Amino acid sequence: MSNKIIAKSAGIISIATLCSRILGFIRDIIIARLFGVYTYAQAFVIAFRIPNLLRDLVGEGAVNSALVPVFSEYSLKKDKLEFWELANVVLNLSLVVLSTLTILGIIFAPFIVKAIAPGFISDPEKLATTIKLTRIIFPYILLVSLAAYSMGILNALRHFSVPAFAPCLLNISLIICVLVFGEGIAGLASGVLLGGLLQLAVQIPVLYRKGFRPKLFKKLAPLEIGLEQRGLAKFLTGFKHPAAKTIGRLMVPRLLSSSIYQLNNFVDSIFGSFNWIIGEGGVAVLYFSYRLIQFPLGIFSNALSQAILPALSIQALEETHAKLKHTLSWGLRTNFLVMLPAGAGLMALSFPIIATLFGGRKFDAYSVQATSSALFFYSIGLFAYGGTKIIQSGFFALKDTRTPAKIAGLALAFNVIFNFLLMYPLKIAGLALATSISGIATFLILLSILKKRLGDFGSEPIFGPFLRIFLASLAMGLVTFFVSQKIFLGATTLDKLFNLSFSIMLGIISYVIFCFVFKVEEIKELWKWARERYV
Image (cartoon, rainbow, N blue to C red; front, top):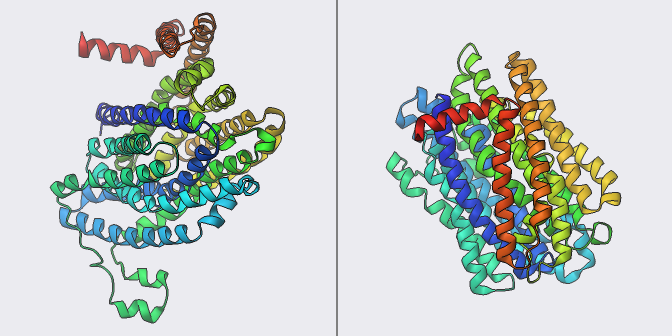
């Protein structure tokens, strides 16, 4: 798959993600203004974070690390019958594992909530609300993980559009339900469950057209085997397929890696729940600020890493890794071209962005100040978050999920240490800064390891562009900050929105100019491509 085809696929995913992020912004604005950063907002953040962890572990995490590489290889080397046979085996396994996790999550919700939000124990009302909401929305893990499974199959078959647009339905569902039910947990709970169901349902017709016919538990051994061996683990040995062990071998380290990554978020939630140390509404502040960080990550870096993985998986099968190294170098440089200026822009406009998008009603002055502070420090590591996704795709294509898991464990230790060191002097901002430091360290370590494994795949073509793009982004950030301080004077929402839009547009224009000043070749290539295509 050429870089142009990858870019086209990434473009489809980016457009879909942009729609989802815009709808997500609308969703978060509604939730923020209805609930502020107080009890219901904090309960929703914690309750929704738990199924999101399991979604990443057995859903999207498994898709990126295990399903896509194996399914991509099967689609290339095997016939359709064998491909769909494997798909059914994976479906059977997923249903058993996900159903078990859902039931256990509902039963043990009180213990889970107390473990990840110990600060809530001192507030019985907040604790009870969070536990109730957690139990109601836990089946979301089953629905969204099956949707992620469907996405993995379709991506391996080079179909990206429908799976990419599916997350939009969750945001639409939440927006409608929250507006209908108003304050309280009814709208939040029903919106999440309906959204998960819609994400799965919209992909089923496409799978059917591609040739998928579900055969539930066809690969299970006779029931008496499960009864004799008395255990879920042995019962699951009834699933037999040549590629099942490969998927399992790839998935287990990825589960550890994903769990460690999510534990970083949980560590932040644990620290953020202690309101008497870092300030009121810590978990909600971190949620709203990091949602803005996920905007450029989702639109660009996630889309690029998702689109690049099938190509890397095929290139990794070749004896020489020349094409693999070239694609990785291109992916990293492309990531820097977007993520470095995005981080600089979010830092420069952190206060106007939060005040304009979320400020109003229950999202008061304190909420704006705390959230903008967290956004500023989260933005420092934005380029590293995106770069890590590209590097991880390289490891996954090489069918190595152990190394990212080990480095993720090290990053978790970094995060805990820096949370302790920074939370007292910087409050909520210290937790965000600790995440950025941990993210940058993770990226640099993974890059160093992959470079040693593959040989030099372009240290100069990576470091040189990084430095030039960094200087252009820094200059753009200074210009944007200065302009925003001079014009951000409006009192009404329309005034703020106009001033913010003007600052962003000026930032984009100045960034392009500074890219030419600092001789950023990547922007010249983009400009040449745009002229050939549209002029």
